[in-house]
Length: 235
Image (tube, rainbow, N blue to C red; front, side):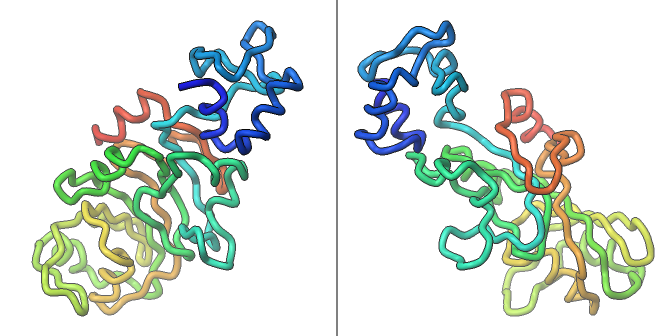
């Protein structure tokens, strides 16, 4: 792929706008020498205004999603894409969220432009665990762990029981829950099925990726490297 098309696909501008970057000498190699639109050079050697290019296609991004942001591209309120560089919305292929976190849920959210990887992560067959920490409206009754682990718990309006999930008590009204499915508002509905309600929910891990190990603050993001991706599938 020509460098012109490569840069345009990363969202830096239209073909004409990217041509202007070349004409102004703003696209260079790591050594500062000008590059040209028909060049074919390694992604990591290219600089625009002295800065490395955004991550190449196939990227996986980890974001610490704050409360109040939605995982939509059409919602009129604050979007998780507002936390990324504006040109990321123009990338081809597009960045998509790997599953979703609702507006009132914070924590680890993955985004990728790799469709095969996305489906591998969210597929029920992969059973990639997702770990949530919940603050509850009422004290735990004491039988939640057994009910969640049974594999027989039914959510309202559904006909298939949930796969077994692991509950760890963190306090009278705090719990850590590990699930391997991604049903709509699953964690909130699970506690609702026990007569309780979630007042705060945070996803702290996906697979072997832990939010604390990624060292992200709310609203921060970073591209994952090969070691990160290996941990993703090795919980």
